[in-house]
Length: 405
Image (cartoon, rainbow, N blue to C red; front, top):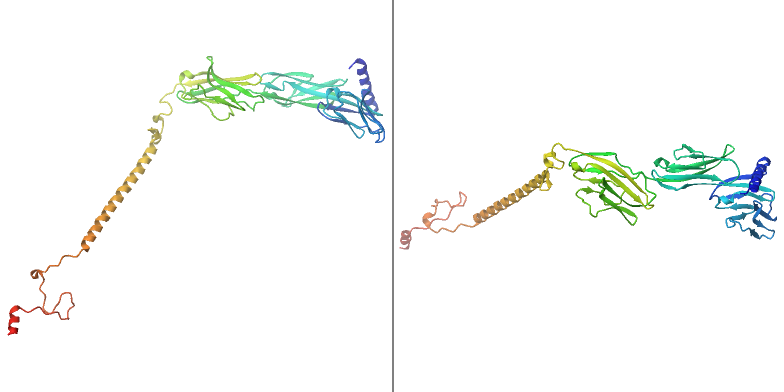
């Protein structure tokens, strides 16, 4: 504003405050404001001015006239009231409608950049239009006081991620509070030190505390100071996965699914695997994050893990299977063989018995030799009960001769 306009603004504001005949509005950019014109009527001509320049007018015929100001597409009448949407800083000023007078202050706050890497810097700014002595107060997401200037510079940590508040005060009275969202990417979280015994597997942890607001384009696990990569990250469409190309999977293990963390596993660690390992991520804004850990490998006393001497007897491996499985299989085989043998013996016995029974059931051949026959007792007939008369034996030959004489 020019010097004359500033004086006019201050004079008008003082008049409003002292007389109470106008209303003061404090709004932030993007808001909507509605100012009433009580002195106008439905049949009267309504004319709204901003800083003595026409904004919008309604004549007696109902025709609307708009001025060629920058806000002409965002102003409209609702009855006699003036409504301005999507407020901008240039909308601030003094508005008049006949005897009604209003002052509009538009405040704004922003972060540049709003998404910042961990340990990076962002600048927060807060301002309000108008010629009054405003004071500012910045509050962190943890509700602690940070600064009292229009602009503050923040070296971002995870504690700075969230909603910042800028409160503007006029004459010791808080008139408006604005909110600024800052999103901090990182830090990468890992362990300072991982200790394992020789021959064991070591998990190297690496993760982000929250989902990243920036797209991850790559990354890796590497060993310092050689810089040799154990495994690298690649982006496939919307997902980030480990690249299996040229990776010794007998030495390095990792997840094949969509990653929720960036952990990897070193298998069968040796003494010379000890050292510093670095996890790093790259983002689509060209920024990167990294974290390192120290792997310490202690010499093992006794056989390495996975050998049979470290396992219970029944869990020791034999031809790729635990010993107890082999014992179970042998027991099942023994029962099956025993059942088969018992079945064969039973069938043989049954067959012999049937042959013997069939042999006994056959009738013996008749013997016609008289000498072998048992002499029958007179009056008795074999096979007949006593008391019954039997058939008489045949007479001798000489007796037949005497009878014929």
